[in-house]
Length: 396
Image 1 (cartoon, rainbow, N blue to C red):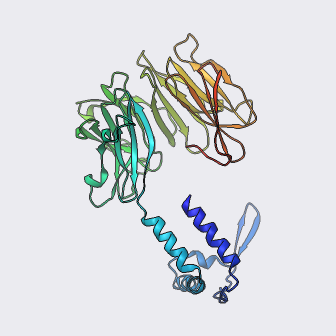
Image 2 (cartoon, helix red, strand yellow; image 1 turned 180 degrees about the vertical axis):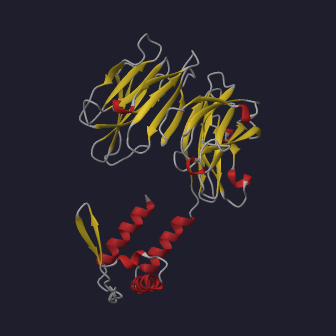
Image 3 (cartoon, one colour; image 1 turned 120 degrees about the vertical axis):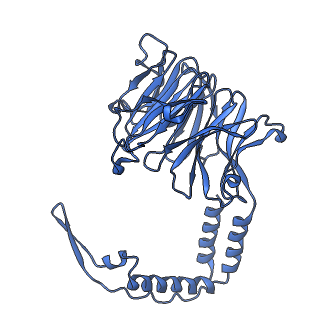
C-alpha cells in the first residue's frame, strides 16, 4: 500500500526532524451555543455554525486553517522530497486485473490501467500467452470524455457473450449492454434501468445461454416517481427479443429496499438470487433450477449469508445461528429435501468471512482479528489444503 507507506514515512520524518518550524496559532472560532434535546437529553453544540459550508464566516475560517497548515508544511525541510515521492507514485504506470470470472476456460476481468480514466473489460484465453488478451468493452473508447464506467458484468456460461451495465458521470444509473466476447462487438438492444445507487444491480445467464436474467427497477410510471429506484425485481431477456416484451421472473413480494445479486452455478445448472433486506445484514436465498421455477431456500430470520453455488446441485453458505464465528453449511438442491442444511465445516477458532467455489473445491476465507486465513475443502467438508499466507495479509 504505497499511500500508507508514504504517510507513515512522512509522520516518522516529522517526529525525527529536530528543526521543525513553529506552528502558527490556530484561527479563532467563536462560540454560538445551540442546544437540542434528543430522547430527553439536552446536547449543547458551540460550533454548529461551522456546519453551514456556504457561510462566508465558515469559508473564511476554513481558509485560515488551510493557510496555517500550508505555512507549516511548506517550511519543513523534508516536504519537497515527500511531495516528489507522492507525485512519482501517482504518475507511475500500473495495471491490475480485478473482479475476475472464468467461463468455459475464458478468463474475464476488469483491467485497471493508471493511464486511463475507466477500467476496461478484457478476455484472456491463455495465461501463458499474453497475446490472447483482447478487449471486450473499453468505456474509454465508448465515451472519450472518460465519464462512462462499467458497473458490473456477467459472462455467459459458454464464454461467448457478456452482459454488462454501463453508467455515466458517476451516476451509477446503469443500462444493460450485450457484447460478443470474441469480437468485442455490441449486439441486441440496450435494456434500460438495471442498476442504480440504492440497490445496485446484477445479471446471470440462463443454463442454455439463450438469454439473461437481470435486475430491473420501476419504469413507465408503474410506481410513483419517489419509488423509482426501489422495488427491485428480476426479469428475463431472451436474445433477440424486444426488451419491452421481457418476462417478469421474481421479486414482486420482496421488500421495497431489497437488493438482489444473481449468480449462475459453475456448471450452469442453477441460478441463485441472494436478496438483502437493505443493509441490515438479513438475507433470503432463492434458486432457479431445471424445473424452471424459483424456490425459496432461506428466509431473513435464518441467519444465513454469503451463499455461493457449486457444481453438482450444491449450494454453500455461512450460518451464524449457533455460533457467532459461523459454520459452513450445504444445501443439496437436487435432493428430495432441498431446504435441509448439512454442516460441512463446523465452527472453528476463526470467524468465517466468505466463500468461493471451483468445479470441485470449496474455498473458505476466515479472519483472525485482522489477518486472513484460507482453507480448501472438498464438497463434503474434507480438508484438502490449508494455504500458507503472510502473517499480515488480506484476501479479496
